[in-house]
Image (tube, rainbow, N blue to C red; front, side):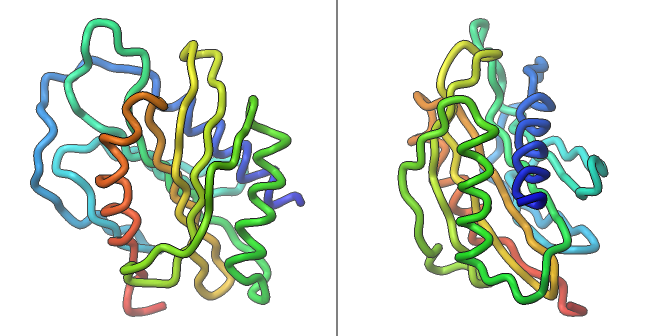
Length: 185
């Protein structure tokens, strides 16, 4: 339960880190590998990367650099949170624990679907949900990809507005499928 609440708090922190900022850089279709000590992931070229340690969790925010339109209040983003868990945790149990925490922590959380991500480099479960985000005056939609390796849990939350989610979903899935662990693990 403590892990689930910490993850929910980290997800909320990730939303606040994604306040809009003007950028003239166009989103490129080129991809590159982003490597950390814990994992590798492919990202669209030019996305901003912010790394930090909060509440005992290692978190990376990956923020789209697509040009903002005059009325935009939200930038599409991906947040990866890494935390230590009991090595006996299995992926389904980890997802269920997080759903319980999100129901308590997120405003009007609505689970849309969940399942196993096919074609990923490493075993992965996902869930799609919506939540009302009052600070953006609307509903956000997200897909979360969950991974486990050697007592570490990884949750990658890919978020957009509900209206633009269908357009961003293929990019989010490509990022989710690219997630992998360094050979040393």
